[in-house]
Image 1 (cartoon, rainbow, N blue to C red):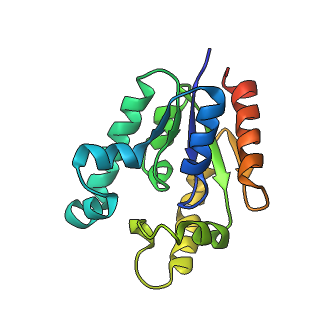
Image 2: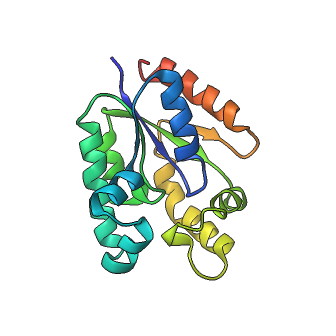
Length: 172
Protein backbone atom coordinates (compact mmCIF):
# COMPACT_ATOMS: atom_id res chain seq x y z
CA UNK A 1 0.00 0.00 0.00
CA UNK A 2 1.38 3.39 -0.99
CA UNK A 3 2.12 5.90 1.73
CA UNK A 4 2.68 9.61 1.45
CA UNK A 5 6.26 10.83 1.26
CA UNK A 6 6.85 13.90 3.44
CA UNK A 7 10.06 15.83 2.79
CA UNK A 8 11.52 17.81 5.68
CA UNK A 9 14.62 19.92 6.08
CA UNK A 10 15.96 23.45 6.16
CA UNK A 11 14.81 26.12 3.73
CA UNK A 12 16.99 25.53 0.68
CA UNK A 13 17.45 21.82 1.35
CA UNK A 14 15.59 20.94 -1.86
CA UNK A 15 12.14 19.93 -0.66
CA UNK A 16 10.29 21.71 -3.45
CA UNK A 17 12.84 21.24 -6.22
CA UNK A 18 13.34 17.51 -5.75
CA UNK A 19 9.79 16.94 -4.53
CA UNK A 20 8.37 18.01 -7.88
CA UNK A 21 10.82 15.78 -9.76
CA UNK A 22 10.17 12.76 -7.53
CA UNK A 23 6.43 13.22 -7.96
CA UNK A 24 6.91 13.35 -11.72
CA UNK A 25 8.97 10.14 -11.74
CA UNK A 26 6.47 8.34 -9.49
CA UNK A 27 3.46 9.81 -11.34
CA UNK A 28 2.22 11.11 -8.01
CA UNK A 29 0.69 14.40 -6.91
CA UNK A 30 3.07 16.98 -5.45
CA UNK A 31 1.78 19.16 -2.61
CA UNK A 32 3.84 22.26 -1.81
CA UNK A 33 2.26 23.37 1.46
CA UNK A 34 3.59 26.95 1.22
CA UNK A 35 2.09 27.29 -2.28
CA UNK A 36 -1.26 25.92 -1.08
CA UNK A 37 -1.35 28.42 1.81
CA UNK A 38 -0.29 31.36 -0.38
CA UNK A 39 -3.00 30.49 -2.92
CA UNK A 40 -5.74 30.08 -0.30
CA UNK A 41 -4.76 33.26 1.54
CA UNK A 42 -4.26 35.22 -1.68
CA UNK A 43 -0.90 36.56 -0.56
CA UNK A 44 2.73 35.48 -0.35
CA UNK A 45 4.09 33.70 2.72
CA UNK A 46 6.18 36.77 3.60
CA UNK A 47 3.02 38.85 3.86
CA UNK A 48 1.25 36.21 5.95
CA UNK A 49 4.20 36.23 8.38
CA UNK A 50 4.23 40.03 8.47
CA UNK A 51 0.48 40.46 8.94
CA UNK A 52 -0.47 37.45 11.04
CA UNK A 53 2.79 36.20 12.54
CA UNK A 54 4.59 32.88 12.46
CA UNK A 55 2.20 31.19 14.91
CA UNK A 56 -0.81 31.85 12.67
CA UNK A 57 1.14 30.58 9.67
CA UNK A 58 2.11 27.38 11.53
CA UNK A 59 -1.56 26.71 12.33
CA UNK A 60 -2.39 27.06 8.62
CA UNK A 61 0.55 24.81 7.77
CA UNK A 62 -0.56 22.08 10.19
CA UNK A 63 -4.08 22.23 8.78
CA UNK A 64 -2.90 21.94 5.16
CA UNK A 65 -0.57 19.03 5.90
CA UNK A 66 -3.55 17.29 7.52
CA UNK A 67 -5.68 17.94 4.44
CA UNK A 68 -2.93 16.56 2.18
CA UNK A 69 -2.65 13.43 4.34
CA UNK A 70 -6.40 12.85 3.97
CA UNK A 71 -6.08 12.58 0.17
CA UNK A 72 -4.46 10.00 -2.10
CA UNK A 73 -0.76 9.35 -1.45
CA UNK A 74 1.42 12.23 -2.58
CA UNK A 75 4.82 13.81 -2.22
CA UNK A 76 4.30 16.52 0.42
CA UNK A 77 6.71 19.38 1.10
CA UNK A 78 5.82 21.46 4.16
CA UNK A 79 7.88 24.50 5.14
CA UNK A 80 11.24 24.06 6.83
CA UNK A 81 9.85 24.75 10.29
CA UNK A 82 6.89 22.37 10.12
CA UNK A 83 8.69 19.31 11.54
CA UNK A 84 9.81 21.19 14.65
CA UNK A 85 6.30 22.28 15.62
CA UNK A 86 4.77 20.33 18.52
CA UNK A 87 2.88 17.27 17.33
CA UNK A 88 3.87 17.54 13.66
CA UNK A 89 5.94 14.41 13.39
CA UNK A 90 3.41 12.44 15.42
CA UNK A 91 0.61 13.35 12.98
CA UNK A 92 2.41 11.67 10.08
CA UNK A 93 3.55 8.49 11.85
CA UNK A 94 2.05 5.49 10.11
CA UNK A 95 0.51 7.67 7.39
CA UNK A 96 3.67 8.79 5.64
CA UNK A 97 7.29 7.96 5.05
CA UNK A 98 9.28 10.99 6.21
CA UNK A 99 12.61 11.86 4.60
CA UNK A 100 15.02 14.44 6.00
CA UNK A 101 16.85 16.23 3.20
CA UNK A 102 19.95 17.06 5.18
CA UNK A 103 22.07 20.00 4.13
CA UNK A 104 24.73 21.98 5.95
CA UNK A 105 23.63 25.49 6.92
CA UNK A 106 26.11 26.94 4.41
CA UNK A 107 24.71 24.86 1.55
CA UNK A 108 21.06 25.55 2.41
CA UNK A 109 21.77 29.26 2.81
CA UNK A 110 23.33 29.48 -0.65
CA UNK A 111 20.45 27.58 -2.22
CA UNK A 112 17.79 29.66 -0.42
CA UNK A 113 19.48 33.01 -1.12
CA UNK A 114 18.33 33.60 -4.70
CA UNK A 115 14.64 33.42 -3.78
CA UNK A 116 14.73 35.97 -0.97
CA UNK A 117 11.21 35.01 0.11
CA UNK A 118 11.94 33.00 3.20
CA UNK A 119 10.57 34.85 6.23
CA UNK A 120 12.72 33.01 8.75
CA UNK A 121 15.89 34.13 6.93
CA UNK A 122 15.14 37.83 6.55
CA UNK A 123 17.41 40.43 8.06
CA UNK A 124 21.10 40.58 8.65
CA UNK A 125 23.32 37.48 8.57
CA UNK A 126 21.14 34.91 6.79
CA UNK A 127 23.89 32.29 7.22
CA UNK A 128 23.92 32.85 10.97
CA UNK A 129 20.14 32.61 10.96
CA UNK A 130 20.32 29.35 8.98
CA UNK A 131 22.79 27.93 11.51
CA UNK A 132 20.36 28.84 14.30
CA UNK A 133 17.47 27.19 12.42
CA UNK A 134 19.52 24.02 11.95
CA UNK A 135 20.47 23.97 15.62
CA UNK A 136 16.87 24.52 16.72
CA UNK A 137 15.25 22.08 14.29
CA UNK A 138 17.69 19.25 13.77
CA UNK A 139 16.34 17.21 16.68
CA UNK A 140 12.94 17.09 14.96
CA UNK A 141 14.49 16.44 11.54
CA UNK A 142 16.33 13.43 12.95
CA UNK A 143 12.96 11.82 13.76
CA UNK A 144 12.51 11.16 10.02
CA UNK A 145 12.31 7.61 8.74
CA UNK A 146 15.29 8.21 6.44
CA UNK A 147 17.92 10.85 5.79
CA UNK A 148 19.39 11.85 2.44
CA UNK A 149 22.51 13.98 2.73
CA UNK A 150 22.21 16.44 -0.14
CA UNK A 151 25.40 18.51 0.18
CA UNK A 152 27.51 16.48 -2.21
CA UNK A 153 24.75 15.13 -4.44
CA UNK A 154 23.31 16.56 -7.62
CA UNK A 155 19.57 17.15 -7.86
CA UNK A 156 19.30 14.05 -10.07
CA UNK A 157 21.15 11.93 -7.50
CA UNK A 158 18.83 13.10 -4.71
CA UNK A 159 15.79 12.37 -6.88
CA UNK A 160 17.11 8.88 -7.70
CA UNK A 161 17.66 8.15 -4.01
CA UNK A 162 14.20 9.42 -3.04
CA UNK A 163 12.54 7.32 -5.76
CA UNK A 164 14.49 4.29 -4.52
CA UNK A 165 13.36 4.94 -0.94
CA UNK A 166 9.75 5.49 -2.04
CA UNK A 167 9.72 2.16 -3.83
CA UNK A 168 11.44 0.23 -1.03
CA UNK A 169 9.87 1.84 2.02
CA UNK A 170 6.59 3.46 0.99
CA UNK A 171 5.06 1.06 -1.53
CA UNK A 172 5.51 3.12 -4.69
